[in-house]
Each structure stands twice: as C-alpha cells, then as structure tokens.
Length: 387
Image (cartoon, rainbow, N blue to C red; front, side):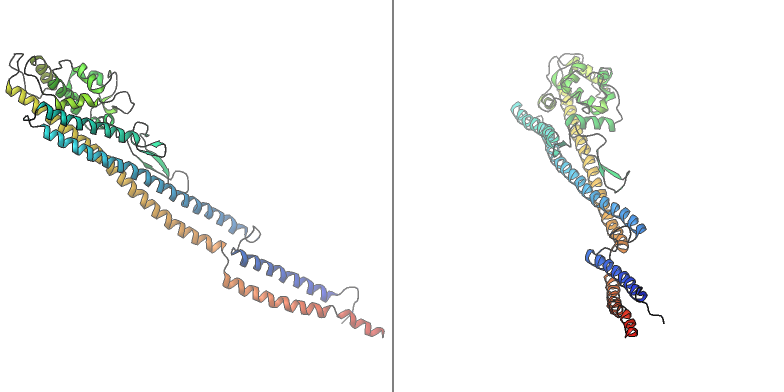
C-alpha cells in the first residue's frame, strides 16, 4: 500500500461520510423538533403539494362549519320571533271567537278591538325589529331568495336560510299566493270572489261599515290606492300595507239596520256566495243582520287561521333548514377528521422511526469521527521512513 503525504484519501473519505451522516442527523433534528416530516419542498416535493391541498380543504371545512353555525343562529332568531307571532295570532283568533257573540255591548267590542289592534301592531313591530346584527330577517328588507350560507370548502357548496317576510301584508300575500290568486288589486272591483280571503275581508268590511264602493273599501283596508299591485305580492314591495285600524272594524263594528240594502246587494253580488239578495228595503231585517255578523266573524276566523298556517309553514321551513345545517356541520366535522388524518400520514413525523434513524446516525457519526481521527494519523507513518 502506497503512503502519501500531500493527499490523504482515507481522511477525505472519512470527512465525506461524516458530512453525510451529519446532514442526515440535522434533518432528523429538524423533523423531531418541528413534528413535521416535510419542512421544505426538498424533503418531499410531491408530498408538500398534496398536503397543502389537504390543508386548504381542512381550513375551508373549519370555516364552513363556523358559517353553518351562523346560519343556525339566524334561523333560531327568526324562528323564535315567529313563535311569538304565532302566540299573538292565536290570541287574536281567540278574540274573534269571543267577538262572535252578538250579546256583547259596543264597549265590550271596543275592548276586544283595542287588544286586537295592539296585537296586529306588535306582530308588525316584531317583523320589523327582528335582525341578526344589522341585517333584518322578517320584513321586506329580508331577501326573498334567503340568506346564502357557504357551508363547504369549495365553490358551489352553499345552503340557504329563508327567513321570509312576517309583516301582516306580506303574510296575506302568501295566503293569496297559496290560493292561486294572481290578479292585480286594482281589478278587485270586478269581483271580490276572485280574490279569495282578501276579497272576503273586503266584503266583510263593506258589510259591517255600510260601504257600497268596493274600490273605496279595498283602499281603506290597504291604506293606499292599490294601483297595479299583484295580489300574491302584497306587501313584498312595500307598495301596500294593511291598515290594522280598519281591519279591526270587521271585529268591532256591527252592521246598521238602516241604509244597508245597497251595501248588502253589492257585497252579495260581488262575492257571489253570501246568498243574500235583500228584501229590497233600505232597512235590513234581523236575519240579514245576523247573517252579516256571522259572515264577518267567519271571515276573520278564516283569515286568522290562514295567517297561523303561513307562520307555521315558515317555522317548519326554518326548522328543516336548521336540521339540514346541523347535518352539514356533522359531515364537515367528520371530513375534517378524515382529511386531517390523511394529511398527517404525509406531513407528520413518525417519532418511532425517526428516533431510531437518529440513533443509528449518531452511532455512525461517532464511528466516522473515530475513523477520521485515525485517518489523519496516516501521514505520520511516512515520517518513520525518514528516520
């Protein structure tokens, strides 16, 4: 074996191996101290790209879950307000049942009317005040299409919370929509029977108040000139609003026995189902007054029942949407667990394997250091030849 002084090949090999093992140890230290197997792209370029996509999905799902919880909060606020609206309408219907007795005095009816009016006003107030932050939920400011909730991590993954419009006019519009009535309110004079519940209400108002002009009665109940407003969209555009004071008169006002033939004839002809032609006299008979009172009571009862149905339909829809969002939250939570597990297999350090590798490299480093020390002594051997 040749001996060289200028070039110590054995030492160079020892340095190379020591450098390699030290680099592997530094990598192990980095992985063990950070807990991540991939700390830079050089550790695993493909793995880094995959894990970043999974991280994007996890972050999106976590935020989507928070969004869904916000959606549930909106639904709960709206449903809680509608619950009180239902209670008020139930009480209003009870007042109508009580007012169905003709034994009540005018003072008794006025007392009923005061509470009836107040409850109508309160329901409109509830609809106008219910909000999520500054976003109104139950009046005409609430979007008809509902509130979009981003419940997924990617585009196109949205759900909707539909709080609706609980104002009195809007609910009557929904009643008419369910009844399939689409004509303009300005055409009501052509026939009340074509306008379902609202037509009956106008007829009852005319009968108890002695009003023979259909247009005037409709305008009084709606508070404004009706114009070309579709019956099914009543209240949605804020173009008309039911006058609660005039509406209450259907409960509190009793038909007069005199001067009523023209009114009775108009209402009977316009509705087509009252079956009252009158005696031809301006003085209504007791039977006719009794029938008018019963018609007005029945109309109010049917109207209150229809309003309760509309509120209950909206509450049921909100309940279904809450259940849907709750299911989405459970699905998102499960997905976060599974996707995080997948990312962990790519990104996280296996401490058992890595500590074993570190121990192995430490032993190799110690051996390399010892061998390098001995290799550095080889040129000294050549000096013995000079002696």
